[in-house]
Image 1 (cartoon, rainbow, N blue to C red):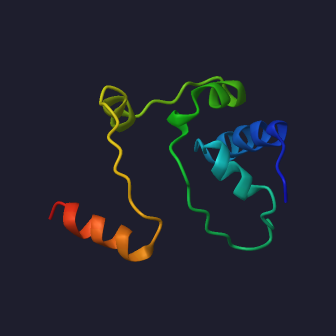
Image 2: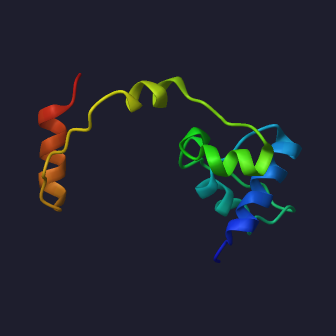
Image 3: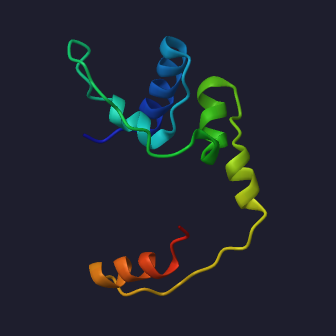
Amino acid sequence: SHTSDEEIIDIIYRIYKEYDYIVDPHTACGFKDIDPDKITVTLATAHPAKFPEVIKKAIGIVPTSNSLDILKDRNSVFYPIAAEKKAIQGFIKDNAVS
C-alpha cells in the first residue's frame, strides 16, 4: 500500500524510539503493513545518511556514513550497457575485482 511522507516520518520516529535503530525512508515503507503478531524479517534498502533531511525531520539527528562521505568526493563513472542479462553478466565478469 502507499505510504505518505508523513507516515514515513512517523515510522522512522517509531522505529528509532522502539528499537534505537534508524531506518531510511524506503525501508520505513516496509514497516507500514507489518503484523505485530508475526515474526518479520525486514531488509534495509539504503543507508539513512542518504536522506539527511528526512531523518533530521523524523528524529532530530543527521546520520553519517564514512563510506558515503568518501564516495561524495569521487567523480561518477558511467558505462553504457545493454539492458540484457548477458550484457550485464559479461560486464560484471569482465570488471569484477577478485
